[in-house]
Amino acid sequence: MEKLLALAQAGATVIFEGGVPKDVPGLANFEQRRGDLSQLTRMFKLPDESVGKQFRIASVGKGQVLVGELEACLTAAHTPREALVDSGLSFIRRRSDDNPTYFIANRGEKTFEGWLPVARAGKSVVLMDPLSGAAGIGALDRGRADLAGKDASAPSVFLQLKPGESIIARLLPDSKPQGTLWSYWQSDATQPSTINGNWKLEFLSGGPTLPSPLQTANLISWTSLGGEDAQAFAGTVRYTVTFDAPVGPVPSPGEWLLSLGGVCQSARVRLNGKALGTLITPPFQIATGPLKPKGNILEVEVSNTSANRIRDLDRRGVKWKNFRDINFVNLNYKPFDASSWPLADSGLLGPVTLTPLKPREMAAHAR
Image 1 (tube, rainbow, N blue to C red):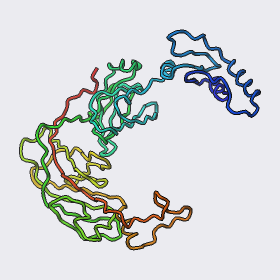
Image 2 (image 1 turned 90 degrees about the vertical axis):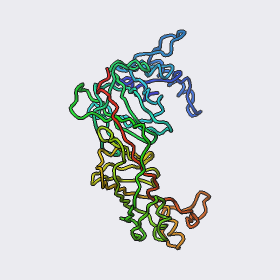
Image 3 (image 1 turned 180 degrees about the vertical axis):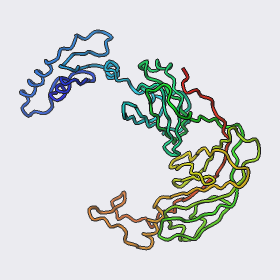
Image 4 (image 1 turned 30 degrees about the vertical axis):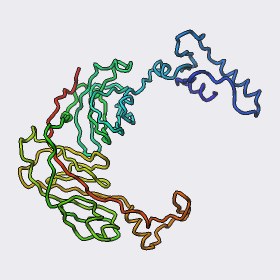
């Protein structure tokens, strides 16, 4: 209580949820500490409780003490809650140079598409894809500030996030920032086109050895395509295929959605020599830009986990558990042994498809 009131004296706002503590814990110096607590609580005088009032407030030095229902106290302290969590999204908020920055992730099972209220002020927003590096000025709506009782200066941002996707949103004080607009897309009604062809597999880095190159027309785990070297391999494999653009109308402005299907476990994607981005989580999709009518070259570098490598080490009796400070045990506190592990799927499993995209027209400022 001494520390909390010292913070309030210096200008902080201190909230006691429900009520002020009425007693002290423990029996050591009990009467003295109870008296000290009583004296400290007399440093501020709260108004009498009234029916329907959700909180009480008292001035303490340069700051204040609030007592009552938590959300009502936070609102009175001009600390609005982030209503975006009501949409099922997760976030981290940081402030740099007075520009709030949000990292927003869709960790649910449903696609989010719509206006997302944020609790910090801004006159424009820049959206950044942490996987592809794409960036642009997003759609921002200050006219929706009444959502969840938000401050009139706090806006809403229009976002499209599939399950597993994330975005960085940086609010800016400039109402007319310079730069390109963020691309909002909607899928075309046509069915995805599967990329078929002869896939070339090159084992780039990892171990225990680099297996010989492979070729396949069917995308399955590289543990099923190669021999024992491929089954024991942990590292990165480059998949390369040459394909023609799907037959039919070319989407305007020539944008396609590339879906890799199953990936074990992460993928770095290049198309016709251009890096598209790194994908580390489902849905393993990325926009490609225009395709050439013939002879497009798709390269996907896939890295797996170390599970098969560890399995191989224990099957061969290699002493690799070189730990000096702990005993290396399994969940049952028995000696750790991965020799009986099943092989873990590795690589590009597909199907790899292309879906035409068409732009969704969104003004930089809806209102």
